[in-house]
Amino acid sequence: MSRISVIIDTDPGVDDAAAIMLALGSPEIDLRGVTVVAGNVGLQASVANACRIVALAGRRDVPVLVGAALPLVGKQAFGKYAHIGNFPDDLMPNTDYEPATLSAVRFIAEQARAAAADGRGITICAIGPLTNIALALRLHPDVARGIESIVIMGGAFTALGHRTPFAEYNIMADPHAAEIVWGSGVPVVLLPLDVTLQALFVEQDFAAMEAHGSPCGIALAGLLRRFDRSDLKRYGRPGGPIHDAMTVAWLLQPELFSGSHCAIGVTLYGPTAGQTWADLHGKTEQRPNACVMTHVDQAGYRRLVVERIARLGATPRPTTPIREFHA
Image (cartoon, rainbow, N blue to C red):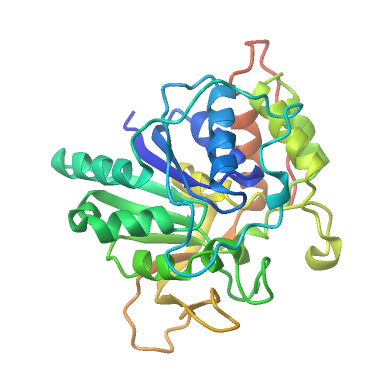
């Protein structure tokens, strides 16, 4: 089986934990490293949380690397749950696993160069502000040749924002980085709020994550319960999204998604800084620079996330079916 070489660039974050666990629980993916950027929480807590996730999964062979503490321009804007800081010890155990000494930006550059030299590409799942990736592309011009694609959870179009009325958090936190990445010529796949909000996870999913005794499944279910992301008024139905894991799910089962190639861009300044736009209907003459996902098979996505994480690191036991998932 040909495995997909992946770097996850992240700011953990509960959703980020789900994405990392999904990658670690999927044999199709060769996770080369977890590069960390400040975002949902400050850089120190983001790094500590990434180390906890990797250690809990029993994968200390996967390096965690420290990246940017600030956006390219302006002040840091933290996520909604920035006050959490480190994951609670009772849900995600502390660890002595420490990050590597190599910087995240240098790691991305070296991995991309090695991939280009070997005639292959590396894929980056970008699930935080895009600062690390933008720096790697800007400081090392030859890096782009080794990146097969950048799969981004970010942006919002008809769904509007969730950190501000206008903007999705990952893009709002560093819009200048987004502009660099989207203009780099590297193939971009974008999973905006418009698609991530289509799949909502409920208590049935959390119970299924725990069904096989997986430490990761138990931890993630606990985090999702404690930091509830349901919003009945906005979504019109029970449950909450797991945004970031969609990037990994797209790599594993792209048939669950549909979308189109189009031009995308971002507002850099003013009261709507971070607001994204997409020319989904060809109203401009701008060349497409991204493949924007617009629909997801909700049941299929939930099933994939739950099944893989429920068995990650679980003690082998007689096979039992995961409950059916319904839209």
